[in-house]
Image (tube, rainbow, N blue to C red; front, top):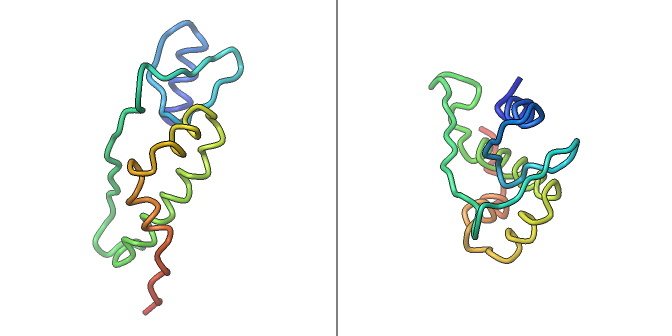
Length: 104
């Protein structure tokens, strides 16, 4: 189980929860922005120095960026905000626009 499914379970049982901007409404659950722009949070990745992601920071960031962008259609309000505020996701757009580094 992940945080999103836990939050959906709590809301389904009558609680109120924060949701990520790309969360979707459905199954009797309504997701709405509090006010204004979505909250911005830093996402971190933890890995071992010798792990499979060692030396592949761009690939990992680009994969996370692609996954995030793929979720935009889940919440039309957030997708609209995303389109109207390109400055809020410049780093993501830049990472996706770069050529992938050559493999060693």
